[in-house]
Length: 188
Image 1 (tube, rainbow, N blue to C red):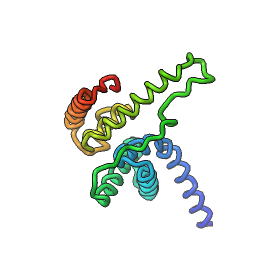
Image 2 (cartoon, rainbow, N blue to C red):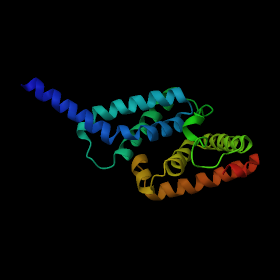
Image 3 (cartoon, rainbow, N blue to C red):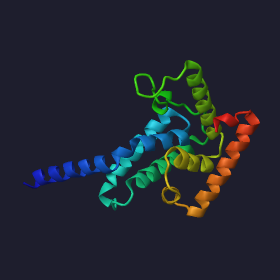
């Protein structure tokens, strides 16, 4: 009887974990990819983060699952970066995940030239973001790409909200400067 109850509890915990935490896998991967600068390392980081989250799920307090898992992803990323002891490499990026397909939808057809321009701008922006120091890169990714609030970012990074706003302003300014230096203002 106890064995059956244990299995039911484990199944319920897994279902709750999947419903509350696993739905944020894309955001977790996106943050890890920008922090690590490498798709394979980002996948490893996300896998490790989700394993840690699952092991600690019984202590999770049902507040903000997105902020909780992203904080874990950030911590695992920083640990991996410390082990690597080198700056991030060029950002590897899956263009299919981050571009809209317009063929076969109700939106107008995009010419190949326009699509190429958009892809080049996106690649340029990714390269510019990758050149930012990590403390600015993470706030830019969390705010601009993941659309998190300042409060959520502060919770994830364990820093005051004012620091989030300051880093975001400085990161945006740095991006504008980098874009101007590269003649890539259109990428922003």
